[in-house]
Length: 589
Image (cartoon, rainbow, N blue to C red; front, side, top):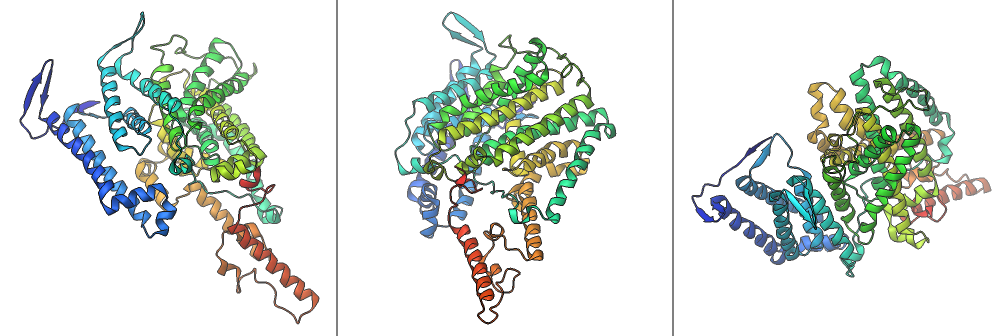
C-alpha cells in the first residue's frame, strides 16, 4: 500500500552524518520519554495507580477491600488506547503509516517480546528491552545481508525480523528462572472465559423429547453431502474452506477451550501441515489417506516442541511463543525464497485409495467433509474419556488436577499434541484445496482471525468451532453485501457484548432451559440442572417443591426426606468441588 507521513508542526533540522533529523524526531524524543515517565508516576504515586497494581496482584482481594476492579479495567483500557494513539502518531511522523495494508503483527510481537524480557511488570526493564529490540529490528531492516561465519544470507530485510524476535523470545524463556514471588506462583495462562458445557443428564437422556435430536443427524448428513449439486464450483470451494477452517478452530478449542492454554499462532501449525502435506502427496507419492495422519503426527510433534519452553513459566508466555513461532514460520522457515525443500509447484496428487478423484470442487469438498466428520467423532470420544476430563479440569484448576496425582506437564503436552495434529491435518486439506503451497494461505492476521472465530463461536464445544467458522468465514463469503458488516470487527464486538460465551454458549444455555422445562413437565428432579439455579427457584411454588406432609405417614415422610436430600445435594454441588470419578473435569483424574 501507500505510505503516508504526518509531519509535526515544528521547524527544526539537525544533521549527524549520514543522518538528518527533523522536527518529527525531536517530538518523538520528547513525547516518548514523557509518556513513559507519566505512566510510572501514575502507577507509583496516584491512588488509582496503586489500586491498579493491587488489582493486578490479587483481583479478588482488591474487591474485598472495596476497590472497584471493573472500573479500574476501564481506566486501564483508556490509558492503553491513549498510549497506542501517541505511538501511532509518532510513527506516522518518523516512517509513515502503510495505507491499504495492515500494520502487521511483527510490531505487536516486538512489544510482547519486550514485555516478556521485563517479566510483564518491571517497567525499567521493559523500556530498556524495547529500546534494545528496536535497535535490533532497525539493524536487521537496514542490512540486506546477514553473515553467519563464512556464509552470507540475503534475507531481504523484513522477512527476518520475525525469526529474530522469535529467537530472542526463545532464549529469554530458556534462560529465565521461574519467579519465586506469590504473584509468579499464582499467575496463569489459562483461558477461563469458556463456560463448562455439561452433558445431558442421565435422567433425561433417554426421554423421547431429548432423543428426537438424533433424527436430525441423518438429514444434516444428506444435505451436506448433496450440497455441491446445489452450489456452483466457486461456492463449493468456499464451503470446503469453511469446513477446513472449522477444523483449525477445533484445534484451538482443544488447546484453549479445554486445556485453557492460549495460542495466538495456530496458523503456524497449519502452515507446517500444508508444507509437509504438499511434499508427501506430490513428491513422496503418498496417498492422501496416509498423508493426513502422517502429517498430523508431524504437526503434533512440532506443537509439543513449541509448547515446551512455555511450560517452565506461567502467564501469557505460551501465547507470545506461539505467535512468534507462527510469524517466524510463515515469514522465513517455510519461505521457498530461502529454502529449496519447501514445495512451490502445482500439486498433481494421485486419487484417494486409487479410486476417488478429489481434484474437482465437489471432490475436495467431500474430502474435507469426510475428514471433518472423522475428526469430530474422534475429538468427541476424547472429550468423553478420562483424557478429555483431565484437560478440562486443567483449565479450571491446575493445582486440583495435580492433587489427584495427574502430571500437569504431561496433560498440557497432550493438549498441544492433539491441537497440532488437528491444525496440521487442516493444513493438508487447505493446500490441496488451493492446488499448491503458498504463504498467502497463512497470512499473519489469520492467526487472530481464527482465534476470534473460536471465541465468537464458543470455546469448549465442537458446535462452537462450526459456528465460529460459519460466522467469520462463511458469513463474509455467503451473506449479502449489506449483511457482511455483521462479520467484521463491529459484529464481533456486538456478539461478544450480547453473548459473552459466544454463539455456541448461548445455544447450550437454551438447551439447558429446554431440559429444565422437560424435567418440570415430567416432574423429575435433576440435580445437575439445579446446581446453577438460584435457591429461590428451588423453593416453594416450583415444580420441584417437595410434596406436603400428608399427616406424618411413612410415605409422606420418606418422600419429603428424599426430596429434601436431593435439593441439598444440588445446593452442595453448586458450592463444593466434585469428587473423583464423576463426569466433571476436576474429578476426571
